[in-house]
Image (cartoon, rainbow, N blue to C red; front, side, top):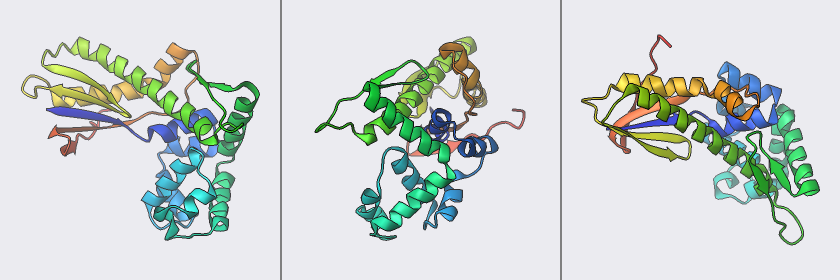
Length: 240
Protein backbone atom coordinates (compact mmCIF):
# COMPACT_ATOMS: atom_id res chain seq x y z
CA UNK A 1 0.00 0.00 0.00
CA UNK A 2 1.15 3.54 -0.73
CA UNK A 3 0.62 6.54 1.50
CA UNK A 4 1.28 10.02 0.19
CA UNK A 5 1.42 13.08 2.41
CA UNK A 6 1.09 16.33 0.44
CA UNK A 7 2.11 19.60 2.08
CA UNK A 8 -0.82 21.99 1.66
CA UNK A 9 -0.01 25.09 -0.42
CA UNK A 10 3.69 24.73 0.42
CA UNK A 11 5.02 27.44 -1.90
CA UNK A 12 2.31 29.95 -1.01
CA UNK A 13 3.06 29.39 2.69
CA UNK A 14 6.79 29.80 2.07
CA UNK A 15 6.15 33.02 0.15
CA UNK A 16 4.00 34.24 3.04
CA UNK A 17 6.76 33.42 5.50
CA UNK A 18 9.58 35.00 3.50
CA UNK A 19 7.61 38.13 2.60
CA UNK A 20 5.82 38.49 5.96
CA UNK A 21 2.99 40.10 4.03
CA UNK A 22 0.29 40.74 6.68
CA UNK A 23 -2.64 40.06 4.35
CA UNK A 24 -1.23 36.77 3.09
CA UNK A 25 -0.25 35.68 6.60
CA UNK A 26 -3.75 36.45 7.86
CA UNK A 27 -5.31 34.43 5.04
CA UNK A 28 -3.06 31.46 5.79
CA UNK A 29 -3.81 31.56 9.51
CA UNK A 30 -7.58 31.81 8.91
CA UNK A 31 -7.56 29.10 6.26
CA UNK A 32 -8.97 31.33 3.52
CA UNK A 33 -9.36 29.81 0.04
CA UNK A 34 -6.84 32.25 -1.37
CA UNK A 35 -7.19 31.28 -5.02
CA UNK A 36 -11.00 31.55 -5.00
CA UNK A 37 -10.75 34.93 -3.31
CA UNK A 38 -8.24 36.14 -5.86
CA UNK A 39 -10.34 34.75 -8.72
CA UNK A 40 -13.20 37.00 -7.68
CA UNK A 41 -11.04 39.97 -6.72
CA UNK A 42 -9.06 40.00 -9.98
CA UNK A 43 -12.06 39.05 -12.16
CA UNK A 44 -10.48 35.83 -13.47
CA UNK A 45 -12.64 33.08 -15.02
CA UNK A 46 -11.65 30.08 -12.88
CA UNK A 47 -9.92 29.21 -9.62
CA UNK A 48 -7.25 27.31 -11.58
CA UNK A 49 -6.46 30.37 -13.69
CA UNK A 50 -6.23 32.46 -10.52
CA UNK A 51 -3.88 29.90 -8.99
CA UNK A 52 -1.68 29.76 -12.09
CA UNK A 53 -1.63 33.56 -12.29
CA UNK A 54 -0.41 33.86 -8.68
CA UNK A 55 2.33 31.26 -8.98
CA UNK A 56 3.62 32.76 -12.21
CA UNK A 57 3.69 36.23 -10.68
CA UNK A 58 5.45 34.98 -7.55
CA UNK A 59 8.18 33.61 -9.79
CA UNK A 60 8.66 36.70 -11.94
CA UNK A 61 5.85 36.52 -14.48
CA UNK A 62 5.20 39.70 -16.49
CA UNK A 63 2.27 41.21 -18.34
CA UNK A 64 3.96 40.15 -21.56
CA UNK A 65 4.07 36.50 -20.47
CA UNK A 66 0.35 36.46 -19.65
CA UNK A 67 -0.67 38.28 -22.82
CA UNK A 68 1.22 35.77 -24.99
CA UNK A 69 0.32 32.55 -23.16
CA UNK A 70 -2.53 30.54 -24.76
CA UNK A 71 -3.82 29.74 -21.28
CA UNK A 72 -4.38 33.45 -20.61
CA UNK A 73 -4.86 34.90 -24.11
CA UNK A 74 -8.52 33.89 -24.06
CA UNK A 75 -9.01 36.34 -21.21
CA UNK A 76 -6.99 39.13 -22.79
CA UNK A 77 -4.11 39.59 -25.20
CA UNK A 78 -3.52 43.09 -23.89
CA UNK A 79 -0.40 43.69 -21.82
CA UNK A 80 -2.13 46.74 -20.33
CA UNK A 81 -4.92 44.49 -19.08
CA UNK A 82 -2.46 42.17 -17.35
CA UNK A 83 -0.52 45.13 -15.98
CA UNK A 84 -3.72 46.13 -14.20
CA UNK A 85 -4.25 42.62 -12.80
CA UNK A 86 -0.65 42.54 -11.56
CA UNK A 87 -1.15 45.97 -10.03
CA UNK A 88 -4.30 44.70 -8.28
CA UNK A 89 -2.36 41.74 -6.88
CA UNK A 90 0.44 43.92 -5.55
CA UNK A 91 -2.12 46.38 -4.18
CA UNK A 92 -3.63 43.55 -2.14
CA UNK A 93 -0.27 42.02 -1.14
CA UNK A 94 1.88 45.10 -0.67
CA UNK A 95 4.33 43.11 1.46
CA UNK A 96 4.95 40.68 -1.41
CA UNK A 97 5.75 43.57 -3.74
CA UNK A 98 8.19 45.04 -1.20
CA UNK A 99 9.77 41.62 -0.67
CA UNK A 100 10.26 41.13 -4.42
CA UNK A 101 11.84 44.58 -4.67
CA UNK A 102 14.19 43.82 -1.78
CA UNK A 103 15.19 40.44 -3.26
CA UNK A 104 16.25 42.11 -6.48
CA UNK A 105 18.05 44.93 -4.65
CA UNK A 106 19.96 42.45 -2.47
CA UNK A 107 20.98 40.35 -5.46
CA UNK A 108 22.13 43.35 -7.48
CA UNK A 109 24.15 44.57 -4.48
CA UNK A 110 25.73 41.29 -3.35
CA UNK A 111 25.14 38.78 -6.12
CA UNK A 112 23.43 36.38 -3.74
CA UNK A 113 20.53 35.75 -1.37
CA UNK A 114 20.60 34.00 2.01
CA UNK A 115 17.51 32.11 3.20
CA UNK A 116 16.49 31.88 6.88
CA UNK A 117 17.75 28.28 6.79
CA UNK A 118 21.24 29.58 5.99
CA UNK A 119 21.20 28.30 2.42
CA UNK A 120 22.91 30.70 -0.01
CA UNK A 121 21.84 31.33 -3.59
CA UNK A 122 24.46 32.85 -5.86
CA UNK A 123 23.36 34.22 -9.22
CA UNK A 124 25.08 34.66 -12.56
CA UNK A 125 24.47 37.56 -14.90
CA UNK A 126 23.08 37.01 -18.39
CA UNK A 127 23.96 39.76 -20.89
CA UNK A 128 24.96 41.92 -17.95
CA UNK A 129 21.80 41.42 -15.91
CA UNK A 130 20.42 39.07 -13.29
CA UNK A 131 17.23 37.16 -14.06
CA UNK A 132 14.26 38.27 -11.96
CA UNK A 133 12.66 34.85 -12.42
CA UNK A 134 15.60 33.10 -10.79
CA UNK A 135 15.82 35.62 -7.95
CA UNK A 136 12.14 35.28 -7.05
CA UNK A 137 11.96 31.55 -7.63
CA UNK A 138 15.03 29.96 -6.09
CA UNK A 139 14.62 31.14 -2.51
CA UNK A 140 10.97 29.97 -2.37
CA UNK A 141 11.62 26.59 -3.98
CA UNK A 142 14.75 26.05 -1.91
CA UNK A 143 13.18 26.98 1.42
CA UNK A 144 10.24 24.72 0.58
CA UNK A 145 12.70 21.88 -0.05
CA UNK A 146 14.38 22.56 3.29
CA UNK A 147 11.00 22.39 5.04
CA UNK A 148 10.19 19.08 3.34
CA UNK A 149 13.60 17.70 4.38
CA UNK A 150 12.79 18.73 7.96
CA UNK A 151 9.39 17.00 7.72
CA UNK A 152 10.95 13.87 6.24
CA UNK A 153 13.52 13.52 9.04
CA UNK A 154 10.89 14.25 11.68
CA UNK A 155 8.59 11.59 10.27
CA UNK A 156 11.46 9.09 9.99
CA UNK A 157 12.24 9.56 13.69
CA UNK A 158 8.59 9.06 14.66
CA UNK A 159 8.30 6.05 12.38
CA UNK A 160 11.19 4.37 14.21
CA UNK A 161 9.28 4.78 17.49
CA UNK A 162 6.25 3.07 15.95
CA UNK A 163 8.49 0.08 15.16
CA UNK A 164 6.57 -0.88 12.02
CA UNK A 165 8.84 -3.38 10.28
CA UNK A 166 6.82 -3.48 7.07
CA UNK A 167 6.85 0.27 6.39
CA UNK A 168 9.35 1.92 4.07
CA UNK A 169 9.83 5.67 3.86
CA UNK A 170 10.49 6.07 0.15
CA UNK A 171 11.48 9.75 0.05
CA UNK A 172 10.01 13.14 -0.77
CA UNK A 173 8.70 13.96 -4.23
CA UNK A 174 8.64 17.75 -4.40
CA UNK A 175 6.01 18.62 -1.75
CA UNK A 176 5.05 15.02 -0.87
CA UNK A 177 6.33 12.34 1.48
CA UNK A 178 5.72 8.83 0.18
CA UNK A 179 5.48 5.56 2.14
CA UNK A 180 5.25 1.97 1.00
CA UNK A 181 3.82 -0.29 3.70
CA UNK A 182 1.95 -3.48 4.54
CA UNK A 183 -1.59 -2.51 5.52
CA UNK A 184 -2.01 -5.79 7.41
CA UNK A 185 0.72 -4.95 9.89
CA UNK A 186 0.67 -1.14 9.83
CA UNK A 187 -2.24 0.98 10.99
CA UNK A 188 -3.44 3.48 8.35
CA UNK A 189 -4.88 5.87 10.90
CA UNK A 190 -1.80 5.86 13.12
CA UNK A 191 0.46 6.58 10.14
CA UNK A 192 -1.83 9.35 8.88
CA UNK A 193 -2.09 11.00 12.30
CA UNK A 194 1.69 10.81 12.63
CA UNK A 195 2.01 12.60 9.30
CA UNK A 196 -0.34 15.35 10.48
CA UNK A 197 1.56 15.75 13.75
CA UNK A 198 4.80 16.19 11.79
CA UNK A 199 3.35 19.19 9.96
CA UNK A 200 1.81 20.60 13.13
CA UNK A 201 5.29 20.66 14.62
CA UNK A 202 7.16 22.15 11.65
CA UNK A 203 7.07 25.76 12.98
CA UNK A 204 8.65 24.86 16.34
CA UNK A 205 11.11 22.41 14.77
CA UNK A 206 12.10 24.98 12.13
CA UNK A 207 12.83 27.50 14.86
CA UNK A 208 14.73 24.91 16.88
CA UNK A 209 16.90 23.83 13.95
CA UNK A 210 17.48 27.14 12.17
CA UNK A 211 17.11 29.61 15.07
CA UNK A 212 14.55 31.54 13.02
CA UNK A 213 10.93 32.06 14.01
CA UNK A 214 8.44 30.41 11.65
CA UNK A 215 5.02 32.03 12.03
CA UNK A 216 3.03 30.21 9.33
CA UNK A 217 0.83 27.19 10.16
CA UNK A 218 1.65 24.06 8.17
CA UNK A 219 -0.88 21.42 7.19
CA UNK A 220 -1.00 18.38 4.94
CA UNK A 221 -3.32 16.06 3.06
CA UNK A 222 -2.85 12.29 3.45
CA UNK A 223 -3.82 9.87 0.67
CA UNK A 224 -3.62 6.08 0.44
CA UNK A 225 -3.98 3.61 -2.41
CA UNK A 226 -2.59 0.60 -4.22
CA UNK A 227 -0.98 2.94 -6.76
CA UNK A 228 -0.69 6.68 -7.51
CA UNK A 229 -3.62 6.55 -9.93
CA UNK A 230 -6.08 5.29 -7.32
CA UNK A 231 -5.63 7.27 -4.10
CA UNK A 232 -8.23 8.27 -1.51
CA UNK A 233 -7.86 10.80 1.27
CA UNK A 234 -7.75 9.82 4.93
CA UNK A 235 -9.49 12.62 6.77
CA UNK A 236 -7.95 13.81 10.00
CA UNK A 237 -9.38 12.52 13.25
CA UNK A 238 -11.70 14.89 15.11
CA UNK A 239 -9.53 14.29 18.15
CA UNK A 240 -6.75 16.41 16.62
